[in-house]
Length: 476
Image 1 (cartoon, rainbow, N blue to C red):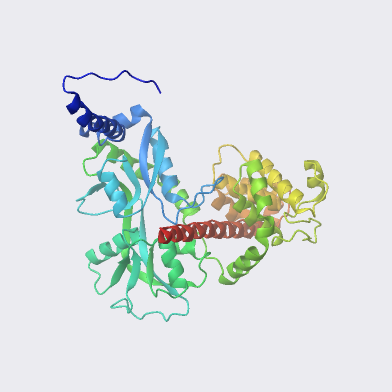
Image 2 (image 1 turned 135 degrees about the horizontal axis):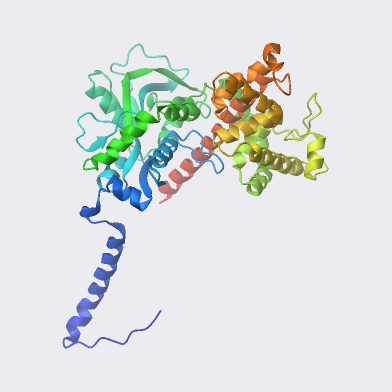
C-alpha cells in the first residue's frame, strides 16, 4: 500500500480529531454506493434489463429446493425463472432468499427485478403480480399413527409452521378467503425441514406444507401422513415491486400465456411425482446408513472425475446392487455398479468386484452415455434418459423415443418417453422397432426409483446441514 505524505492543516488539533471520522465516512460512502442504486434507476425497466443482458430473480432458498451439482432436480422455481429469462433473451442471476415475508422485503428494497413463484395478493398492496402460473393447496401433515382429525376447527394442539414461511403466509390467505376455525402458531428460528422432523418424531403434532412439498418430503420422512387439504387452492405467479415497469409485467404475462406447454412440462418434470412406498424407503435408509460410509469417498472421487453429483451415483448403485460389491445378476453383470465384463474391459479396468474400479467405471460409462444424448435435451431430462440407457441400452431407448414421436409425443421429454417404454414388451409395437423386445416397465421403474433415492440423499444432506447449523447457533 502506498504511503501518502501527512496533510498539513491550519487547525491541526481539529484535523486530528475529525480525520478518522472523515475516513470512516468516506469508506462507508463507497460501500453504500456499491450496494445501492439511486431511486431513479430502480425498479429497472424492461428496456434496461434487456440492454444490460441480465435479469435478477429471487428464488426461495428452502428445504424443498435441491441443488444437485450435475442436475437441477425438482427445482421448479429456478427452472421457470430460467425459462422466463430465455423468453426475454437475457441471462439470469438467481438470488436465493427465504420465502414469504423476507422475499417481499427484498423486492421492496429493490434487490431484484422480480421473484419467481410468490403467493399472489388480490389487493396488490405490497407487490405487483403476474397472472397465475399454477395453484397450490395447503395440506395438513401429522405422524401416521396420529388419528386423522374429523375437522380442522380448533385443532388441539394447533398447526405449527415456521415464522415468515410461505406456509405462514398461505394460512393467512386461507383465513382471508373466509375459511374459519383454523388455528395455527408460528415458531421463529426453525426451518421447515426441522419442523417436519419434529412432527415425525412427535415433538409437534400438526404442521402444514404448501403444494407438492409432501411428495418431496415423503422419501425423507416416511412416517408422515398427508391428512387433508386446508382451504382453497391459492394462485402463485411472479412477484414484482409495486412500482414495476408495466412492460415487464406484461412480458411475464405473455410468457405465461404463450409458453404454457413448456411451463406444463416443467411442472410435470419438477413437481409431479408418485409417492414413494414407505417400506422401500425404510429398507433404503437402513442399508445406506449401514453400507455407504465404507464407499462414500470412492463415490465422491468418481463423481469429481466425471462432474456428476456423487449422491446420484450412490442412488444408481443402490438401485443396481444395494451397494453390494459382490452382487451378481442372472444376466452376468456384476459388482457394485453391475457392469458387464466387456464394458469394464473397454474402459480399461480389470475387476468388477473391486469397488473402486466398479464405481469409477460406472461413472465413466454413465458420462459416455450422457454425451450420446442429443445436445438439445437439457437437464434434468438429459440425466433421466441417461439412466434409462444405462438400464435398457441406448438402442432400446432410441426405439422408445421413435415410438413416442410416431404417437405424437415429444421424444425429447422424459415423461412422454417413459410412458411408452412398456410398449417395448408388446409384440405389436416391438416388432416395429430396430432392436426388438426390451423390459420397458423395468426401465421405467428403474429411473423412478433412482429419482426417489437421489431425492432422499439430497434431503438427508440438507437435514445434516440444518442440524449442524442449529448446533452452532446454540453453541454461540
